[in-house]
Length: 194
Image (cartoon, rainbow, N blue to C red):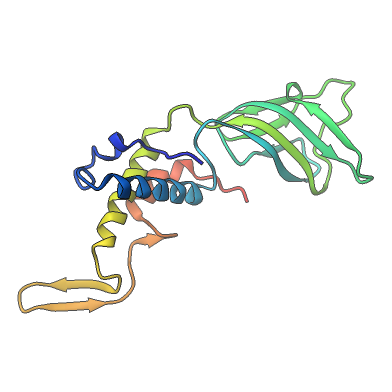
């Protein structure tokens, strides 16, 4: 996992500018990991080795990380334990969604992903060379939110200054620990695969 924003990009937010450098570096890493956890995927360009899937008898499957640049190989483990290695040239790729579809030659051993438990292993290259701006902005907003939350009483829900008043309870407006504004920015980047 790599950080999704640089220090310079984070400091463009006026609520972050001037923070202690070590604390900011920590918050960048924490926020980057939280964004990737929420989206169920990694964003930086990388080689994904041996991603395991269950075969379902269909011609296609969805990889966890995308966009997909290329398929290196698919290894199918047969019921008797033998393995069949298929090169990436036998697949059509929907780069945007991470869907791969068999396009085998007539001599191929398989034209589908045979049913089985964790019997498909895929090695491929996926991710962005430049992180999309909405993902960067979501990460920056999460850093600013984490910074502001660290200054608050975690139980304080509301307060009033004139004729002092306070209300205590849980945090509202978050799901999975992320504020709504961050979730909106990340909506198009979430992977729903399990």
